[in-house]
Structures are given as structure tokens and as C-alpha cells.
Amino acid sequence: MRDPARLNRWHPSLGAWRQFDGTRFRVWAPDHASVDVVFWRDGAEASRRLEKSADGTHSGWVPAIEPGTRYKYRLPDGRLVPDPASRFQPDGVHGPSLVVDPEAFDWTDERWPGLPLADAIIYELHVGTFTPSGTFRGVEERLGYLKDLGVTAIELMPIAAFAGRRNWGYDGVDLFAPSQNYGHPDDLRHLVNAAHALGVAVILDVVYNHLGPEGAYLSAFSASYFTEARRTPWGPAVNLHGPRSEHVRAFFVENALHWIHEYHIDGLRLDATHALHDEGDRPFLHELASAVHAAAPTRPLLIAEDDRNCARLALSPLAGGIGLDALWADDFHHEVRRAVAGDRDGYFRSYSGEAADIAETLRRGWFYTGQVAPHSGEARGTDPEPLDFEQFVFCIQNHDQVGNRAMGDRLLATVSPAAYRAVSALLLCAPQTPLLFMGQEWGASTPFLFFTDHAAELGRAVTSGRRQEFAAFEAFRDPAVRDTIPDPQAEATFCRSVLKWAEIGGEEHRSLLRLYRALLALRRTAPAMRARSRREVVVEALDASTIALWRVPGTEGPLAVIARLSGGPAEVAAPFPAACGRRQWALVMTTEDAAFATNAASTPQVRVDYDAISVSFSGPSAVVVRGTADS
Image 1 (cartoon, helix red, strand yellow):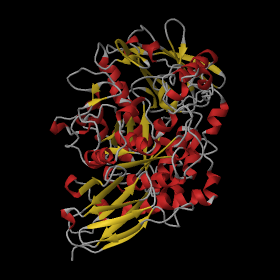
Image 2 (cartoon, helix red, strand yellow):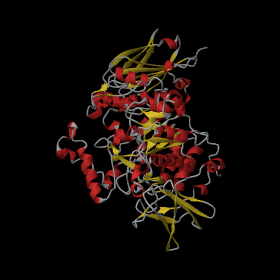
Image 3 (cartoon, one colour):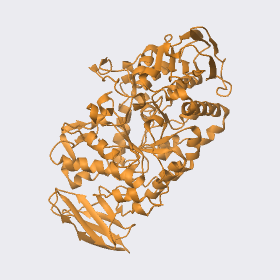
Image 4 (spheres, helix red, strand yellow):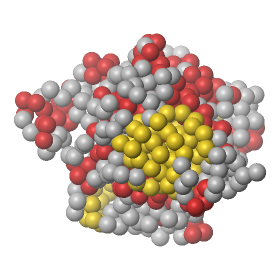
């Protein structure tokens, strides 16, 4: 069933859309005196001159143009280029665009209530490597598994059309068009509709700070899309403040709204917002947040990746903030990785991995709140105190922290299974919003490598650049060793990154999966897990390697996780926080229980004393205990 309320509210202003018995075309091309739309049907080519308006847009209605018609725009110099707001590029980024009618899809999610941020358990996946088919349909086939796991939202890495057959997605160039490598636009709609039927939200990763290096035609329509006044790692910055920037901003805002209205997407993860250079009085991100939050009654979420630890991004406008909903907070990952894997190259130099610093990160939301970071030599971060815990997205793995490693190795390839289980428990019992990276829950053996499929000359440059990135890392100072870094252009690099679902049949993987299911079920059902305010969460370092995290929800029974992340045998005592009062305590689980650990040396021993919970650890592990509710 269609959702008339959604469709009646949404009126695109760019691209090609059905109107009466034909199609309206509209493109912003202020640098050109004329633009023709050229279309092909029944084996014949025809064209129509669009009418130019004072704002630089060219538009026109063409009768009898049906969905499925291929078209391009012809510029005055004779170039034929795809629509920058194309809804689909069936023949690739250099081919013609396709007229698509989003209203033809029969939605059945009119009762979908949306996903409150506080209930989010996010599962990040790459469509091309999540299943052997590498398609939207393949993801849909696994929705039942994800629901049973305890996931409440899937986050799709960028799907905008890119050059070649394989890419992480951050080289997208047709931002309105789902990649033809993953399926038809209606396949994506079918995936979202099916997810909503199961109670699972869909978040989409979008990239507004740059376009990919091949197949990007925005500049063919106007040089004003980018500005040389500011540079980014990918070249000239997107023009968000200079002349004509109001049209550039409108283009990206419309892109966000189109995902919400035409695909019922529940939220957007904004890539590298620190690279959006904007000195205007009304920041672009504020404009985007206002438009997105008003777009649907389910109030879509906006989550930013931003390396500045900037609380203002997620503060409400009433408090002087930008109004985003949440932020990727990488300090937790970096501290944990330093603790259990010993990483010290690059930005890991700015982290100690000591339990005291991990506890501080859990208490605050991020570690750097304005102090100088040794890696950069510059002050980093702001006070996170005004933000709620759920506004921090924590992980122990994500696509960046795996894929940006030279060999794409996952955490479990480096640390002991016991340490992995312990940090997993800490992540899933923490009050921050957890994010899992595909396959993490069963300890997937497959790496997630950096892969591309660019044209030959560009591809060689990408391969060389990728290997040169690691020249400063101790393990790769020798050029011969750097040459062993997998070639991003090789198809084999991509194939190695595809998850092997048959692994779940092995007991070692199956037992880890049971642990994740148990922890996620606890997170969903235990009343203490609703204790998210700062006064209801107590975190302490018990020694250099052990952390106690308490969730104390008023009259409900409190819950504690005591996690030893590294080191050998130890006896630790976790004093009861004052808020806990006098209660009876029971052991819920340990990560070394037989159901979860086929290779456990021994199970931690727990005893409750008058004023503390004491645990005898034989090595890395975590225990979860629960107190009785007030009578």
C-alpha cells in the first residue's frame, strides 16, 4: 500500500519525475546558456530544449516520456552527460540516466513508528561484501538473522553509484542513484520495506564532503559546486559558503530528503563532516538537520562522523547547537584497541589503553575534551557533558578501523578470543549506542580490505597511494614489505572481503554468536539498561587492566559488568557505588561460560562481600551481575 501522506508532501525539484502524462526534467546549470534533454525510446533518439530560469535552472515537461526511458543532457559544447540528480544509472556512471517513478512501489510500512536513538543497536554492513550475491536482495535475505541477533538498525555503507564494479562507496558520483551493482532502486525499497516489517530501521551512509575521482559530472554543469578557497584530502572543497553556494547547499539537502521520502530511509550517517568547510552564519549542517527532522513524522536520525569531538554538533539549536542526533565517538575504539592489541602507530600514539583512560572515556563519551593530542600536537575536543550517552556511537570495529589497516585484519585476528569476548561485553553493556561491523558477532575470519575498480591509469595511482600511506608505520617502512599490501584494484582483494556465512557452523564461531545474542538480549530487556543518564552510570578502573561499569536505574535492579581486558590472573574488588544501596546480587553470565567460550581456560569466580563484588580472573574476561530491585 502506498503512503499518501509521504508522497503528497514530497515534491522533488531536481532530476526527472513523473508529472501528468509525461516527465519533467530540471537541472541547475547556471554556467550554460542552454541545456537539451536527449532521450532514447523505441530505438530512436529525440531531444527537447529546456527553458532557462533566472536562478540558473533549466527545466521542461516532455509528454509521453515513461519510466524506463534513458536520457542525458546535452551542453552547448555538444557533450552528452548524465543527470547529476539521476535516480538510476543502469549502464554505469558514464551511461544514460533512467526515468524512475518512486510512486509505483507499493509500500506496506505505514504503521512503522521509526526508531528512537535510545533503542538503536546499529549493524554496519557493506552491501557488496555482506552476502555472496552482493546485492540489496542478498541483504534482505539476512534480515531475519539480524533481527534474531538483536539488531534494531542496519547501516548501509554508501550505495551511491560509483565507477566500476566494486568500491567501498566513498567514491560515489551520482548521489541520488543506488549503484546498479547492487540492484534496481525498487530492490532497495523492497529491502527497507521488509526491514520495517521486522521492526528494523535502515540508516544510510552518505558522502557530502567530496565526489569520487571518476564519473563525477557536477562540475560540467557549474564550476560553483566546488571552491579552490578551501582544500580537503580529496581536492577542492564543496562550495558551502561562496557565491552561488545556496544552490549547492540545496542540492545536498534535496539529496538527503530524497532518500527519506523516496526510500523511507530512517536516518543518515554523514561522512567526515569535519571536511565540510562552512563559514556562513547558518551552518549547512544546521540547515540539513532542520530539513531532515521535519521530513517525516518518524523524525529521521542524523549521525555524524567527525574527528573533532565537537559537542556543539549534537546539541539542540535551542542550546546553541547544530541539531544533529549523534556522533561517531572513536576515542573508545582507540583506547580499547591500544589496550588489547597494543597498537601505537598513527593516532594510536595519543591513547594509553590504560583502564583509567577507558573508564574516563566511558564516563564522559570521549577522552579528548580540549587537551593536546600527542599525535597531532594540537588541542582536540570539547566538553561532552551536555550530551546524552546515547548520542555517542561506540564500536570496537567499523569499516574504517578494519579496512584502513594495511591488511584489513579484524580485531580477533590480533587479540585472544578471551580479550575479544571481554571488550564485546563492555561495549554492549555500556550506555552509549553500540555499533557492530558485519561479521563481528561470530568472529568472521575474512578481512575487510580496501578495494576499487577504477580505470587503468587512475587505478595504478590508487594502488601506489594506498601503499605509500603506510610508509610511516614501523611494520611497513621497507618498500618490499609495503608491496605485500593487497592491491585495491585486484578483484581477489574484493573477493577476500566477502563474508563466509558457512563459518557460523563451526562451534568456535557459533559460541561467540551465542554470546552476542545473549548480551544483546540483556541490553534490550534488562531494566538497568534503560539507565542512561550520567547520574545513573558509574565507571571505575579497578587496576591497570580491569574496569567496573555500573548501571543503577533508581528503584529497578542495578546491573554491573566487570571486565578484565588484558593481563594474567588477578583478584579484583569492585566496591558498590553509593547509589546501589544494600541488595542481593546474582551472577548473570561470564564471557568464559561454556556456552560462549569453547577455549576458556577457566571461568571467573565471583563472590559478594559486604561492600564489594570480588572477582578472581585467570585472564581476560568479563562478568555480568545483577542486583535485586527495591522492594
